[in-house]
Image (cartoon, rainbow, N blue to C red; front, side):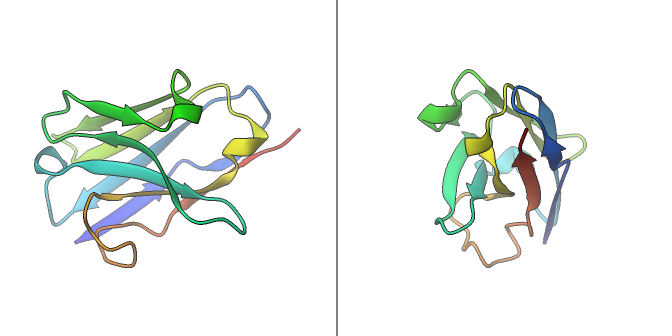
Length: 117
């Protein structure tokens, strides 16, 4: 099992980013996939989720209307489209399988997103 996030970077407030998560060892079509983030000095928090069939999407209240989660079963990838970013979105973003331990192979090593003017 291997999960790798990419797409992070340093952007200005109001900018957009698309995070990608490539998965091997299990199918994203048969798992509830989550995006989480961890800001400096804070605990990791759940941000968005997508169910196995992709029919149900879930978002943390503070990102609703700005973030969008999606999946591509053929590529076995999950994405997080982030729009209108603010400094409060600065964190390391992680992709992983719901129910898996955060230190397991079912979660990636994260990608840094920094929003700063």
